[in-house]
Amino acid sequence: MTENEKVKGPASYFPSIEKTYGHPIAHWLGLLEGLGERKHMEMVTWLKSEHKMGHGHANALVAYHLGRAKAS
Image 1: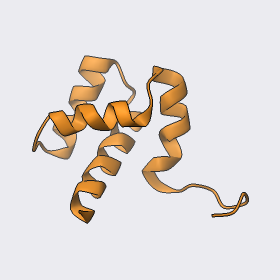
Image 2: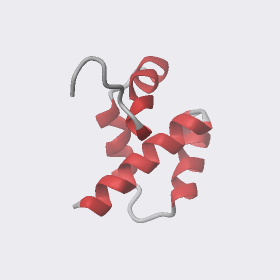
Image 3: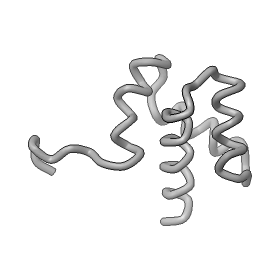
Image 4: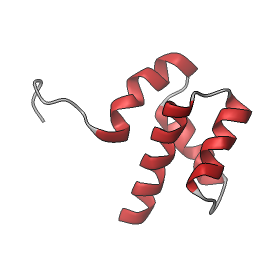
């Protein structure tokens, strides 16, 4: 990817998530992995309630996490 290409999709939120919540993306993905098999919105709600994360950030992390799980 060149400098002029912008990151798209859920990963485009990652710099803001790391800056806002003070943890690397690997931290959040590890927490989501620990939840086991849950529905998308259950995971989003968990991040919002347990970690005070905004909806957009929580949704982006969950979408990335679940997309990664499907790809493997």
